[in-house]
Image (cartoon, rainbow, N blue to C red):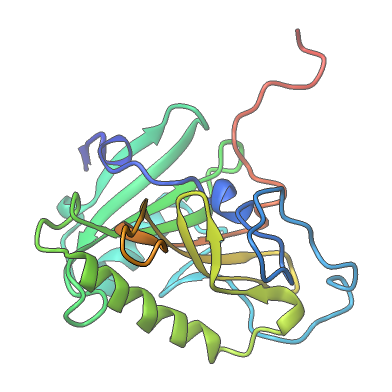
Length: 228
C-alpha cells in the first residue's frame, strides 16, 4: 500500500461546507447552515443513500480496498493511503479514467471515521488538477449528466434541491435520504462579470460529487466543549 498526500494535493470543499451551501426547499442563494425539514423523520419515501458502487457506509478499509479493485478492475497498488490531518480520518484514494464514459479521469477519496474507522464519506472530483485534459466544457457536461441522473432517482421535493448559486459556483443537486445520509453535486470555480451582458459567469475549475453518512453528526476529530 503506497502512502501519499493525495488528499492534500487535490483540495476540495469539504462535504460539510457543500452541505451548508443551501437550505433544502430554498430556490434562492443561501449561505447559512442547512436545515432539515420538520417532517424528515416521518417521510420514508425515496431512495436510500448507502455509498458508491459496492463501497457501502460502515465498511472497513480492507473491505473498501476489495470493492475498489472489483469496481474499477485496478490493482491494490494503485490505491493511495493518507490522512486528513485536521479531521484525523484515514483516506483511501484512487484515480479512475472514464468513470463517466468520455468524462475524463476522476479522483475518488474514501473517508473513514475518526472513532469507528469505518467508511463515512466518498468524494469524487473531476478537475484540471486531476486530469490536465479536463476542460470547462467537459466539467459542464459531466455536471449536467449527473444532475439529470439524480433528478430521475425519485428523491422527494422536500428533501432535494438543485441549481442554487453559492459563493464558489453552483450547487447542481443535493438530497437527503430518510436516515439523513446525503448526496451533493457541486460545480465550483471562479465567478466573473461579463462586460457586455453584465451577467455573472462561472468559469468552472472542478466538479465534485460527494456521498456522506449522517453528515449532521460526522465522525471526525473535534475538541470537546469546555476543554479549554
